[in-house]
Image 1 (cartoon, rainbow, N blue to C red):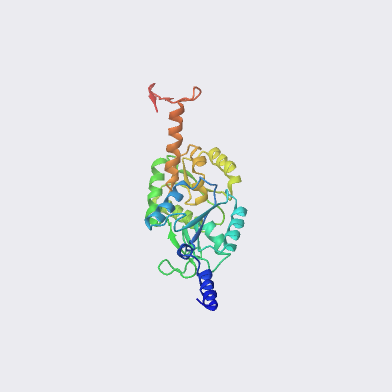
Image 2 (cartoon, rainbow, N blue to C red):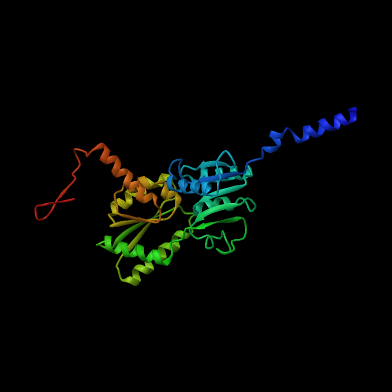
Length: 283
């Protein structure tokens, strides 16, 4: 073989690489953003990973997922969003209106798949059928029928007609509209239900807000469909108030709490029964 042909052959092999290197492709990378702490996104994370499996994605094999948690801090969320965008991932997955809004302000090109209450009303999409732009996803909307059902349930469990509503962070533009619909339905039904609103803007405000709600002694608690509140389901459930929410976390958290109490056994200082007026005992 002539020297010139040998140099050309070696050069082409060096550029193309060995067969194994040619077969190895760059894996697409997804950034998963959650406002709460790691481990607080149980049901949301399960749904996300189940969806990946349904479409035959396997982490580490044909997809890379970077999980980022803001620990309930909007400031930390902004830092994580900026860092993620600087890394230029193939896609950013956002849960909640606040998280989606933070990322949307920083990029118009990186695809964003979101779960929000009202993507059109929040300005993320032109319409549900044709969202346009770089944001798509699921609208987790509490429609009129569900709002009416919530009010119906409230009228059954609130003998005094008082309820407190725990809404998500200030970035959630969907929250105010949902509250207005609930109050309007309550007025139309003549249920006499009065709804007081408590807004939590971060993890640091949660204990004081729950204390204020408990002190107000409402008959029930309405929990906004907000990932940050879902991440604090165990803390909210510990308040011991009957609660209505669109998230499965608020059904799972009390069940886990009761199971732990059952395994530990009853506290010797805790009354399990209260005296009934007729002298019998009621649970």
